[in-house]
Image (cartoon, rainbow, N blue to C red; front, top):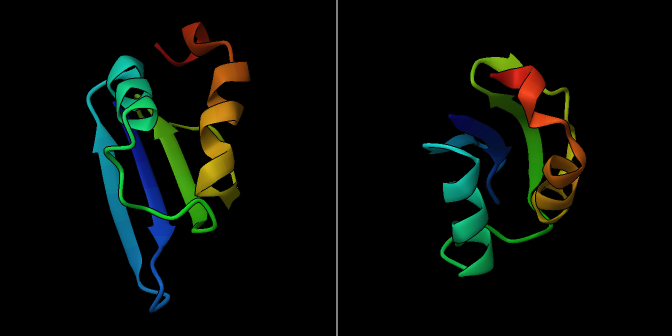
Length: 73
């Protein structure tokens, strides 16, 4: 499971989750996610492991693509 915490326009912490990496990729590629690319991400966990990502939502997809996801199983 991928869980993402981010700050919305009102600086309130919100959360979105995806069942697995493939669901996250499908949502990104199909533009199903209504979160602007400039939205600040505060925390990302993959299967309960914090990947220590802090940055914009729009860059998260490319960051996760570079990871060796086997270490988070």
